[in-house]
Length: 488
Image (cartoon, rainbow, N blue to C red; front, side, top):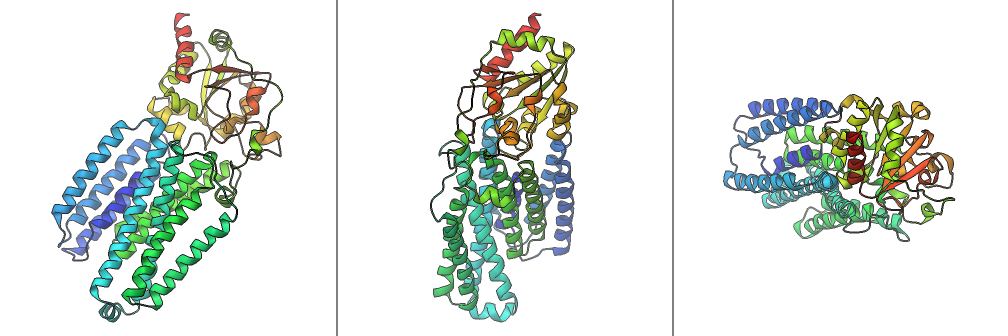
């Protein structure tokens, strides 16, 4: 969805109002919208997601070609921009690692918001060039509507841009991923929002360049500040929700930009992305048993309340001993987390799963909705390794049978398997639904070290008597286990 948003936002810079054949172009836009709808629907299932992406891309191609048919466009600048942007996108897509995909999505969201912001700014410049008096005469009652949609474009676009850039910095570990809070933060953010509303009133009430233009610039600055200060108090454990919400914002910004320039396909595609992104955000919050307000304003991860010591100790085990247990297992559930992405171990995990099956074990992959650092992160990784779709199991499907599982193999997951979420009322994630790995007969946890996870919480699962730790690089450990099965 992020790629779709970024692409449709760039249409704004190419659209005009000098229709060559407006009816024909609008018909092409309708066809594009149909492709978008079916494409997004297909993205909802793992086995059709790739085709859905292709269908959406075809829809975007139709929209771009249709937009190019508008008369009065400067094709030199358009083609130059497309070539430069395509080259950058191709290089980035080729070089980006799967571990860096969340950061890439954040950048997509951010630049989509920036594109929409620039459209709103350019339209305001056009109004000023037209002349206030003439514009008021020709637009009549549309003056207030134009100002409001421009304000919305600047507001949402600015928040999306800087908020996404900050999310990128957190996800890429260029700054701390912990929540950063200060006294009076909520009041300060509320003040920024009120100042933006005041600037809108000024734009509408005082239609003169000397007053209205500075008010418009102030909106941009305030929106960008709100994006930064809105994401600062959000900790790393909540990043999947933030990425989803910012994706929704980028779609809404694109839709607002569509109203600004009167581009139908931009309005439709932006609404589709905005709505689907918001629905996904709600699903993610539900998976964490929290509401959106709690995610945005609770400052989860800012304190050390989740880092309290747990009784007992983590007990290590050799890969050879782990092999003997896995070799005898008849039922194995593999639970992937961000650690698998960091180690790029998905192909090794798939190979181990196939070897376990060949050895007579039933193998399933349990996927938690918020595992990783973006929505669907683990599904993407496992799909890349060609793990059979029928072996992927959602949390609600695997939990009822977890007590009958011989071995739960946890690879780099932390909060999504932490028993404290259902046992410790004082834990910050208490009430969050988890994959019940602690109910399996034996648990093997692959981890690089003894530290806490990305959210800063200690995982009680690692201290259980039935749990054994396999320390080291996940790819190397899984490959070593696979090699032992091959030597059998």
